[in-house]
Length: 98
Image (cartoon, rainbow, N blue to C red; front, side, top):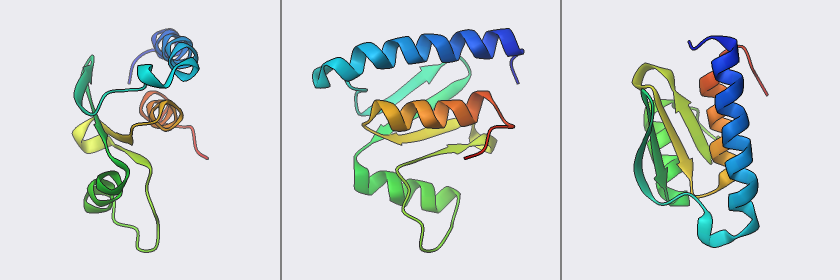
């Protein structure tokens, strides 16, 4: 895990970008695979996100909008800045829970 100041800086930068992106829907995350340092970020459509997360973190009856898969260092998210930031928080702060 990255040191606390680095995690804080990354989260701050992500929040700043999210604020800008949420002002204009054309600036939402793009579908596909992206990299943030050693992390892989996969942005999928809503139906595919649930299937991908259920395959990696099965929880019957739950509907996923996104998930953090620590073993793969992968964030899977639907095309929504809020969901992406939520999963980024899981990735950067392992002690954080809902």
